[in-house]
Length: 635
Image (cartoon, rainbow, N blue to C red; front, side, top):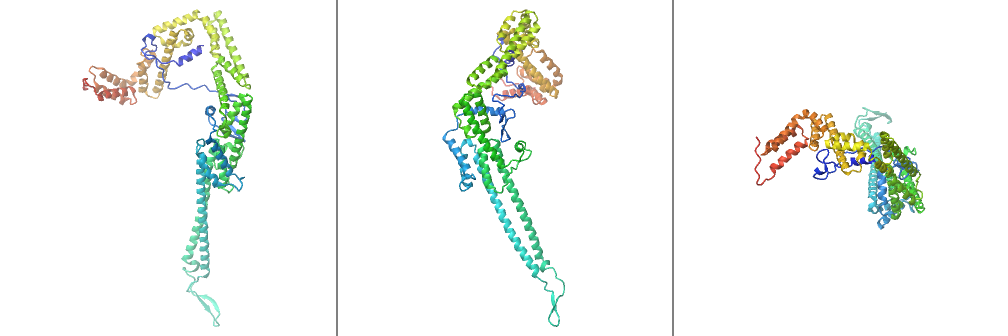
């Protein structure tokens, strides 16, 4: 009970004025603060079971993955998946005419591009159906993206075909040039070469000067022929390299979409993309060009030990679609047997693996509502276990057992029996120690009982028993005395002793809540000021506390910290004091006050006090003031 009371203190609102303002002195109800930060939640240990079961062979909520064909597909944040699953259970099924037409169109596309189609795959016929499928909102225009990828691939192929024709033409040019050069080298001779003959008219060979540049293979024309042949070879190789690079680049861009859709569990789009891929590129190269160190590559290499290919994506997508159908069949069977716990697990598996597939999307609303009601109670059951509200836990467990005959209640029943018994025994021991006047031991036992089961009804009986005890009366009297003396720090120091003694007294509880809340606010401000001081931001530290000092002028620790900071920020505080003096004079010295505020802001540009004061005076100067005396000119 003590724990519950202290928790309620943390949620109490802050009061204006001093650390404690009596009810009769309050002008308005206390406003609740907006928390600037919050404590980090305690680390959760990974348990072997969860609200939807971790023992299933495919879905692994702890690792946030689901395994298909040996490949572990990441699901992202499991909490987000759980939230989406709850949203799915509250939505009507996709059974309207538009949804039916969309699924029929997807099936027609797959059949049109299928290799088993009579007459062979019809790439262009399937391509023309993609805009129709893309018009359905549930498609998220993914068919449009697929059509764009196919269009870009076909344009790339046209460019590659053009390069191939260009290579053919320059190869023909090369052949013509080589033939012409060979003929010239064989037949062209130097005109200065004379054929010698003997007296009988027989040839003795050529005489005269040797062959000179300008004819034959020594001519400039022949040299230009060789140069042109070399240029053609370089150009042809460049075109071949460009063709290969463009093919690889286009394939990689196309494959990026396929991998993305696979990770998003859009398996039907993966199938369509894979079949289009095989019709666009018929070179047999289907390896996915992805970084070997990427997460997608590791999905395959670390799971099945092979590099991913288009065929592997196609196969895994077909396997996932089949698994989803089997999960939904198992769900229907278990639901008909009133096995809601197992049915919830199977539906969660089907949704996690294929939330966009027909068997999941078209599931009837009545079936989903039965699962939603069961899952809601199951989640609340685990919440009450964490909150240690075993009375509510038992009520929920009984309701779940009545709703689902396969509800695993053993662990829940054991936890309820064990913790409630431990709390009851601790209370009985506390009573025994109290009768033996062993107050310290009694306090320890009652604290243990409260921590085990904060809502144990026997705690109220124990509180009634000790309400008249001398120690309780003494603590309550001490609280009243410290409250009248304004010694709020001592009340905070003895909060764990005082809190249980004033339960049930509304006036004292309100006073205690207000004191603890305001002291928490002061301590938070002191902590922030200390951090500012450590990094040399003394002006920020002082202003942090000065603003709070106006609310709580009687807190000694707050005043002491301001006194320690005062010498370090004397110039800044002097400027603010001067500004306030001129502002509060009669008549008001607006100009002088404004100049001092500006000086203070010059010392500490981030000052809220200086900025607020200067803006306030500027607004007074600029605002029309009918009938009022003008502000006195500053000296």
